[in-house]
Image (cartoon, rainbow, N blue to C red; front, top):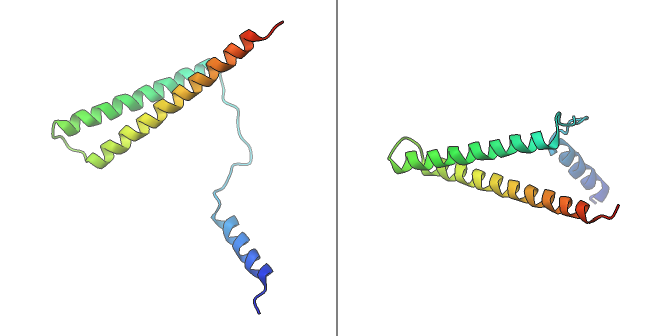
Length: 102
């Protein structure tokens, strides 16, 4: 007969081996939240500009594939949506703080 605990042990050892390594310690970002947010907005802007440049090169018949262009556009769109979500959460937190009575 098959022992179910052996099967569970085999699966758990495979899951442990397949899981990505997580660093033991994480470092807090240096600088202020404002500086971090500015850097991230600059990163989003650079991604959007790069995607737009890729679209222009593709439309002009330059070197590049439509596949890579679409990937760049989707990455830029996702980064922009994330920035909008963070902005919304920050504004909600600020409004909540302003509603607090001191």
